[in-house]
Image: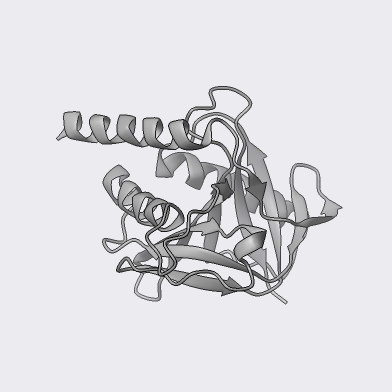
Length: 200
């Protein structure tokens, strides 16, 4: 099983790297409204994202690959218009604690500006378009490869403690977003973020 996982990961690296190189073409726009000691407050305007929910509610490598490939197929033509779209950043993963204590994981790609008004409908099961309203996030940026859930959770914990120490109010700590900005082929100066949403 480990060999299969490694093979799939290498295939993913080659596929994404061959088509898109090191840098995505477009990044979800935002405005920085405030700087904290080790975090940033941003406002994102309403935007559409293409998303896939993890059917196993798991952060495992196999589950992440399933979501990633479902979304990757969408932007490479698995949609009603058979339209290809450029890779964007960030790729976000929502980790949301449910009332019963379980977790929901949702992976999303930001849709390019050219497709924001009328994105083509997905044809693959489980892929859907989500329209996120304007929202404020408090975010922490860190580098390196973040491949394990424990890395994201530790960074989210650091951010949560910083926000609480700074007296930030109205923050939803029941869930957080992980956000990756770089192709797997980029080896240095990688950009990763964790976000908490600030409630209106």
